[in-house]
Length: 381
Image 1: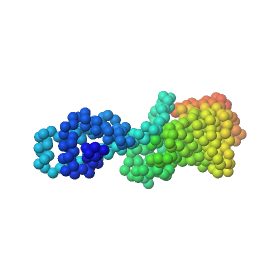
Image 2: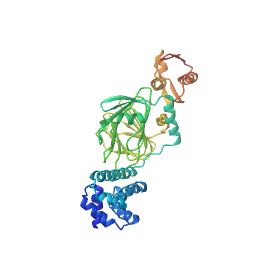
Image 3: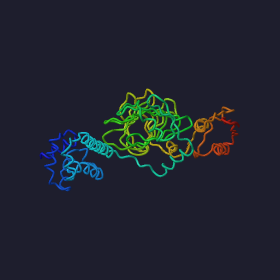
Image 4: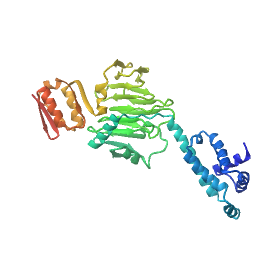
């Protein structure tokens, strides 16, 4: 490597002494801006991190370097009459290293393909926020914080989160029994948590995998990363994939995990079992003590309707239907006649409308008497 390149490297690392700086100035004295820039480009291209630095950053760093090692005549005279400021070198070196780090992060982020949400999904997110339903409790840094937006998560994590922490126990976010929450993980993966759901996730994913732990129901729009699989751990087994959309539900049936694949490719691995690959429109059911999942092709619409702002019930018993609505609208449900609990019901409702028209629709379809008394719903013949 040419001597001036070695000296430039030492200069940018902040380890050059006064004698070496004088030599660097002598060697670059006859260089014009274009020649100096070419030398710096060669050095940057030899470094994988800085090779991807954008033009604006390179221009800024080039200006810092050229002003210091190629000062004007007047500035040169001043410099020869005083001790060279090592602090100045270190400051510029720090700027350079920041650019290197930023470029490395840019490269890492560029290998990840973040999900692009459809306009309908963005509209649902906005609706959830406006309705006041976008709420959760975040456990982080040994404290609990109520959050209503992703900005709330960012603020809560500042200051106390150990940088580089990659264990699943880094954070826990829990939705109330009558709320939901939209959030973005570090890699850009978007997660929609249904009511009564808990997600444990690391503040920073590791360099090898992206792992979270789910109890409840969540819809995942996973960022594609060919080098790091995304793994969701549930009580009955794990779901693994590299970038797709799927829904996981662990609370519709006690002890049962349902996994519905919307698009892409995923696998499920029951506790103690082997890995099974799923296809789009597949539903896998994982049960305690079972080492093989039940996988079948289904109409996925009823299983994912909640994610787009709709309650959809396909041949539900009235008791199942009212359990969902009771949670969402924070109402106690009382059946005055036991036999009406098993009445079957098929229909769909807008999640964000008042409960009153929904109860009227149920009355109209079933002929049952439905009363709303404060926080209680009473259903009778």
